[in-house]
Image (cartoon, rainbow, N blue to C red; front, side):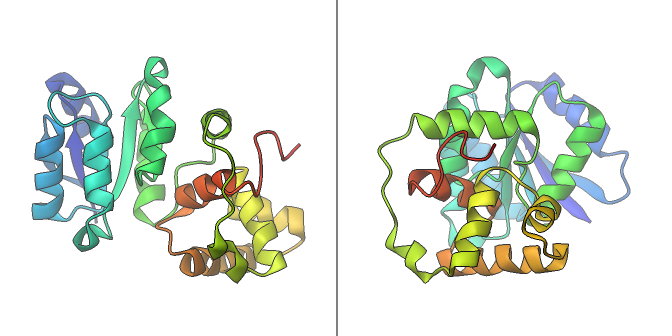
Length: 221
């Protein structure tokens, strides 16, 4: 059972998401928060698998709430998905840097919401859709000058290649096809890279790939 906490200051928005999620046999909405403080408190109390986090809330906003959750070692298994609208996209990159596992647009289709929750709950990042790739590339391009991380020295050449493709937003299946590997081998490479670099999920690999200068926006044709 995937346990979900909803964090949004609008009651109707929470009710809408709850109605979609509650109809699924494998998803249970275990709590609701109207602001960031409540979201952090519920995450610590309930230890959900996924927190759907609005980015703009009164008091403690979703960005800081996300950072507090992802930096808390006791909440290592909690994944945060940011809820946003296209007019607040400037926050998306900052949220991913704060540790979010991805984001969903608030007017997303019900099936996309359910898919997103399941993807993040199993430990993957919600970064595959083309719109997400473009957004990550755009905001990564605005980031500070590349700062090669010494952590990357631990990677083999093949792992660097795989990480670059993860940074471009490719799924394991797409990486396998491009490098002529089995999907299982591609998944193993990604898991080893995350372990070596001590990152939570694929979203953090994307950020590190851009910020280290390993790849740049538009790198993958």
